[in-house]
Image (cartoon, rainbow, N blue to C red; front, side):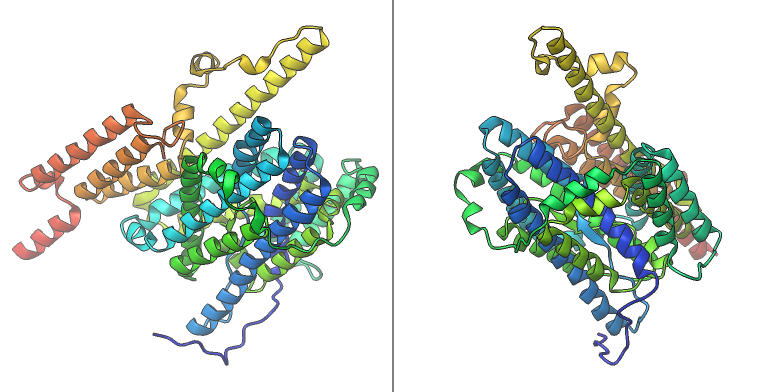
Length: 537
């Protein structure tokens, strides 16, 4: 085994660190701002709790994981003799953050009327989540041994297209002039291979977008001035009193949801690590999972209710020539802004439409990198896996649209003097189907990342004529649909019986095909056919 070469010099700063720091920081930090607006505006939580406890602990947790990524990358760089190693990006966990906020904290608040109790429940939820992530670290190698890299990459590309490219562009084009200037300036430098003499491409692009936003009135001076009211010094301190008791019992009611999203985040983390492998840098899966779980666990002891995780996008930051230190710089910015109450100031000065462009660039590079390293014969699997996560994005937008429409109807009725509870109106699959949103959108949105990987595995194994592997993949699909990890509205037994039965039937069918292939050359795997031909010759 290679030992650590402590004499190898790894730079503490590289030119690409600026782009990577900006991109990774705004990828996660904007979620905190959304959370702050909900906690204060909807849940009426006191500012001393929001900024003094929650925000400061989020910054502390993010700093722990990001600092780990830097020092782990430096260790691996010295061990493998790679002074140009690029560290893994990390930050606030995207989808899980909003699930914790909207599916756990807010329902708990509305049921109890107590914002502090909702915070306590979410902290206990995060304890359970962290323990599950740590447990996965010890079994993940067994699982990943049987999952093709191409399937993982297909899911990565699909998630990138859905949540980074489509999601970021959709939100960014709320202010088209800002995003258009930022986007095409950034693409000009990167795809035109133009190297600016001063500053980085991202700095120039976001800077120009920010100028456009202030000149056109997108950014408001009064909002910027008002943001200074949150300044102070909020040192994160242990919050052991939040743990256990009634709040822990409340957290246990969300265990199915926690399990589903813990697995989803583990999958996303492993896909991010797979991207790094395709860039020539291999970070140990067990070590990365343990670090993520332990950082989250420590953060919850300080009152953090929201998970942090490692991100996709390593190929883009590698291409940008970022090094090992950019996560540490990102974490330092997180920590400083979160413990000083400067959270609101950061985004009241820089428009989100400009910073979202950096996520678009990451998505583009992620897709390009994946298709470069995958053999052409596996492109069908990649395309299917790319499409499936987009179902979750679409259905999520549909659901948000339904909620917005209900609220608008409620406001209209109230203004007309009609007292009617619009929450009693259920928009079911029948109504959606009549509007052109078939029930399949719902089914494919539930566990979309896992569905993408399973479907890609099936196609890859079919291409390779590995019939037993196809059968196993269908057995896994059947089991996952039975407990609701895919296709089901909830994590429960017999969650999606139609899918469970159909996948099981296919699993049995491919066992039969394997048996038949012994006497039917047309069904034999190509490697077996070549082996027989070589023996005959």
